[in-house]
Length: 274
Image 1: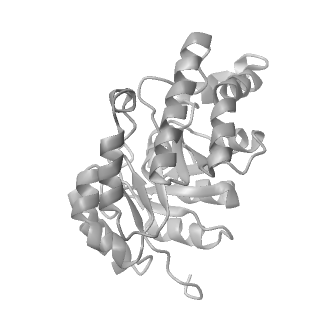
Image 2: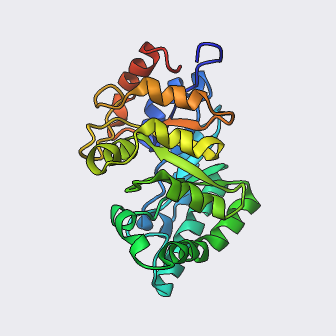
């Protein structure tokens, strides 16, 4: 890692955090992930004044902007056609906000569960059927994302085998569908369910990995702690990222945005990032 520039950290923030950490963001035109627009009540309401506030807070920012898409209350592999229509509409609403914010990336949650890992292969054709249901849900969403130049990145949630999600993203055969990694989710799965360690997820995804949520945990729960407060081996994570030809956005996603300076200090203190 010493023969290449250190990666620049970004952050996932809501408007309050964006306003508080604005100077830090602008100093290096850091990547941002806006997190104000994932709730159904926001998307069904008049979200445009909030989007305008976000745009004003971003005045002077020339870095890349992403957004966390809606996820609460649904899965993208739903069996129910009526529910599927709602899921598709929610994600299209998210892309409408992306277009307003000039976001070039939207995070979507993986459908794979721990139950899936142990049970899908007990039912002939179940994996292909899951993939087909996801395609039915996302077909209009992928088309819209392509049209507005926004990349959908599928984030691991319960995933035990990262190859499931990587294969799902590749099955779209579209530059608009790529892979996201949440380090805390991966470490939880490693410690609690026997999944591979975090750096394996990066190596397996390769250049399909376009987005990383950086958060620490003890491996028991989804903590969203500042790096250094849990047990993730951060040098191995950043070494794996350094080996990639295409560099993903590195987004600190903390439960408490006030911990952002502490998180940055830890990773910069280790010489891993700036």
